[in-house]
Length: 113
Length: 112
Image (tube, rainbow over all chains, first blue to last red; front, top):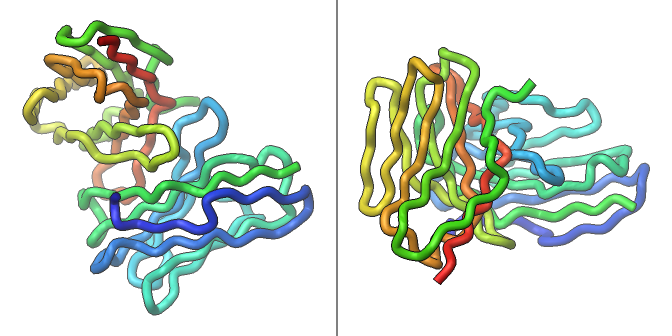
C-alpha cells in the first residue's frame, strides 16, 4: 500500500458527460501528479500541483482540469468525454518535487461508452 | 514521437535465471532514470533509479545500467523469482523538470 488513495476505482459513463476523479496523497506529501494510461500506452503525464499551485503541465487536454485543495487532496475533472478518454488515471504524490520519489495510487479505470 | 522506448512488450524467463529489460531514450538532456514495477490492479511502484553521473546502480537483486553514449539503460534481475512477474516501466526525467516520461512497459513472466 503506497498510502495514496484514489476514488472511485471504476467509473463507467457516457460520451459528453463530465466526471471527477479524486486523489488523496500520502500524509505529508505536498506534490500531486496525474497520469493517464491508455490501452497499450505508457503513462502520460498530465499535470502536477505543489501545495495548491499548478507546478507543471503535460499534454493535458483543454477539456480536462485539475485542482489541489488546502487539505492537499486533488481532483481531476474530465468533461465532454469522448470514447478515447477511456483509460486508467493514476495519481501520484511526493514530498516535494524534483527528484523526490513518486508514490502511485491504485488508479481509477474510466470507461466511456 | 516516443521519447522513451521499451521495444520488447514481453519477456519470459526461468526462475533463477537473469532477466534483462531494456529501454532506449532519445533526448540527451534526460539526466535521471527510473524503473517502476506494476502488478495488475495496482499502481506502479518505484524499484530503482540512476543519475546520469553514474553508469551502474545496484540494489539487492536489481541492477540498473546506463549507457549515455548509446542512450540506453537496462534493468538486470538476478536471480529472477516468480514474484517478479509484473509489467516494468522505464521512466526518465529531464534536469529541472518535474515530470516523468514513461515507456510503454515490458511484461515480465518468470516461470517456476
